[in-house]
Length: 462
Image (cartoon, rainbow, N blue to C red; front, side, top):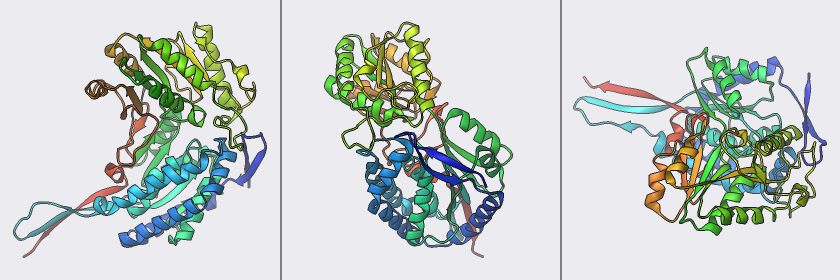
């Protein structure tokens, strides 16, 4: 049986090894999930809720250890990784639990003499979750928890870089008393995933990853009449209006661009600034960026860790070098960051000006600690540039004028529009994208829709 190594970006060592699932293992998981789901959907919602609450208890109890595992697997600084569990994972789990009863109850219709009529939300069946490495728990929890609460079974295939996350879920659900087979995981190759997606025992697929990966999943599912949820890439813009609180905008936009080494689908990758504030904004961003500490992510003082792998860092370096060759100006001296090193995942952050939309840096997803900044003369120019993208995940405006923000937001082609905020998922709001950022929706009251199907009861009393 073949194995695969997990190379840690921390030091380039083999952190652990895992075995690919055999064909027999995959067959067993698919069959067990189908059988277990039939039983699980008959379990009262109160019991499903109790299981998910106890699962959350396991994660919170082990947050520090899990955080360290995240750091070793994908490189985010240890000063941040436990908070993926303590904050975001906790917030999303608790919210989806809190609305489960309301969103999974029967839907009443008008009364009619001699009839009893209602719509029942039935579980969709077996849900396949294909999760990425960049936020390994925050991306997966969006589907796993509501799927379990809705009475589905779940099969999780986590990214090759973060297999421990799938195993942690299994341990947490076992601790919580979830019946065997309702949650399972597989370590599989891309070819194996395609076959699983095409298997008729899979009733829904939730994929988070690249645009190319989304197309591959959609193609694999095309032989079935099932829905596929796709959360794909982003090239998210920010617009700083003339009336913005500049210090506040600088602090938050830089964080939105550099957090997680820029490896966030909803991170800020391009900024448009009113020309009257452009010089001051750029100077403030440069000053703040130079205060970041690029280093070993196991050091508590580090706030900028390595990228997930050397090839990812080299892709970003190439994009920056190409932009500079086309006339862009790089404002950060990489030598200021001692850990920056070519042929290494350790990459210094970068800010570029004199950029335009003929450069890949401003149009293609970078997924690294780099941002390009352009001046604009007014709202109309900013709106045109923000919409000049193949992506539409999030966008933000920085202003003290709520009416102006609403005017801009109503014209931006995006799934989420922020005012004076960025790079955050509110579990009470629908998480969705348009264009190449994908389709479907997770979180909010709408997050249960794809994980259930309506069944109408039309009962006549004779």
